[in-house]
Image 1 (spheres, rainbow, N blue to C red):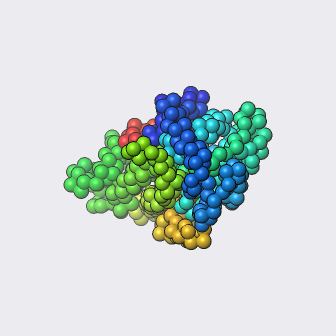
Image 2 (image 1 turned 60 degrees about the horizontal axis):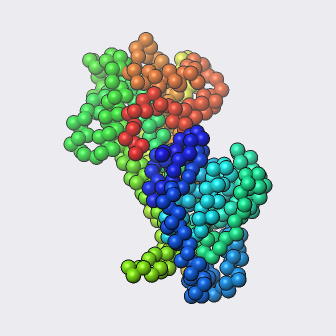
Image 3 (image 1 turned 45 degrees about the vertical axis):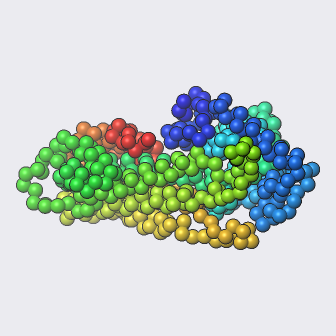
Length: 520
């Protein structure tokens, strides 16, 4: 069953979580249950760890130290202390706390990963994490402190602290002590057994959750950018000829083909377009209008590719070591490096490119619309220019944000810094790569919001002519929140209102069916 934004529970199938389920969990909280089929493999995996401890053979992370201390053998009577100390010592995050939406994704993906039965944890551990999730107890996880290799150790340690009844959590947005929240919910703090602490904090779930957050915001930005771009086309009395399907089919890029099809539907039956089919002296529009399918289609492809990578990672087993069974039925412990988040870093970096470009081309359309020599509209989109500055400085804001995104978009995945006394000598920086997507998305949402206001202003100047039926709905939706800009006024609230329409996905709500293929 797919998660929804209400109290309807849904079943998590380890290794088979769908992007729609993750997107729904990001949007809102709904209780989750683990599929019954998962429990036998979880129990079998935990039994392997118990057998190793009973036998006394050294196995990394089970009865040894960690990282460079892997050669240090830990006595059996100190294994619980070892796991608890691991969590306490690794809870070193700093900075602002991750949002509830991101932490929900972290918890769900950790549940799914451990439940695949390769990590050696008891069902109690997974059930406790599910109990916290269902009770709405959100561990307080600082956003900074992971290099995206050897697992997101610090963020996941803060998550695990809550299971121990240590540290802080959020409940209904309020910060409180974990011990109090667990007591109120009737959840007993766990005592970690051999390997369980390591299994909980090894893995890429924090960086993947941050990247998924960026992915879902990028989807909304792409939709809003296309809708707003189509509105700008009519505001500037541009041509829809560049959206001709034949142009895009002979190139063959799938995102471009899909985007051109959406633009054709967005502007279909526009009276403004019909008014300048004959006698228009302009031969070609500037690229920010004419090349929208090429730019936004390429962004579409990057977003889709990132989505595929992140969905695989969301279902992956990424802790270390892992437990497998040989052909002869013998259980073995195998050390590897699935905790290295390079795929996530690359996906996040490509999302950064898409988010930056959506904002970049949007800023160019704002510049076009306020320039009377290009748009044919009143200077700075206001009556009585001179007395009124209109959209002059709103464009400056858009330019500032677009420029900022250019710097932030620099790839994080090409950076690395050795840690753990050079044992962990190449890292992905995936957590930062993903974390910076929030700032970029906020910037781009503001740019698109400014364009939306400018384009709607242009449409109003063409009255009584109307734009297409699709875009008239968009225009009317904006005007429910922001009136026509007839003279200079306090402008920031208008931008914020439009920005919220973009961020919440409401701008494209009236034409959501056009973007169905963007949400697999």
